Image: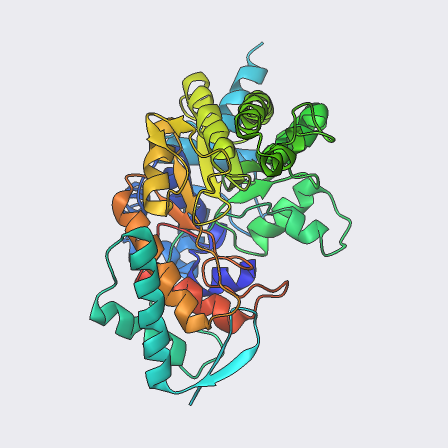
Length: 105
Length: 346
């Protein structure tokens, strides 16, 4: 059922920019269109590009913010990508903040 | 003729006029019960069009996509009998299922049961947060009945009410609510401090108004403690049962509230997203249920200042009440919720 919703109406997660728009909703209470416009502005792409797998795969590679192909090349993955996303979206991410606290000797 | 389904998932064949009639009746039922505005004639026509399309699977037009959150996300794989760890399930959601967000959940999906294994859940959260990129929520149910005898410390209101012990039943629910608040704050604090982005209170108010009160109060305490925590309050049903009958939050009696009224209190308590629920009537048709569900959800979206994610799983949001929801109905619900209901997410 999760797959049916994803195909019917989902943004596409890290295949596109769905995770980034989701962050702005979940953390900043942004409504859908506001969150899309905010993320598009930060990525310097159009709102329409946010759900284009081809465009977003290149944008994510260029910005090094993680793609679905986490095993290939030098791409950031997991927490590495979240460090870069936090900076890109001007957003504090809880796990990143926790990581930073832990590495301060 | 149009082949669609009943709310129990069985096929039914209808003429286009019969589909229109059932959608209109579903809309009218929501208007009558919830005292909300009806859908416009154009919106009803669009829902009819979505239902009557011949394709097995339909989808939104490009540009109308929304965000997906997942109640008990990891458990959906565990229930299939696939014995892999929670971090790996979340990696599958992120990189295979194209999930916009992730949710980690324990098999005993209630705060009371989880409080005794918080360290282990913190470990799962911390490990998962290292290997995933999408926002990560931790989900569980407030589940007030677990605090009643014989499973819990409080007298059982369901036994007291038939005996006519109304005051005692109310007192028992208020006591249970206080236990639940402590557990919700304790567990949520633990998983947040381990690295989760936030918490999902799933099936809120399943036990009625006292459970809704407990969840709102826990949300308020968490918001004060963690200003940046993501908090999703997802409901159990469209209507808050008045099992207590008089309990209030912020001066508002909770019994009998529909989604467009519930969301105002969730927002007031400090929630960042709200999960609206509309029950599927298994004896009515999918067109009737879809018209009704979209009407309620659209009213909730319009009344809200925070993102609203409609619950559209088995037995809610017009999806038939079956263990294997048919994708012809799921995809039509998804499309109608996004394009007519104007939901922020599902």
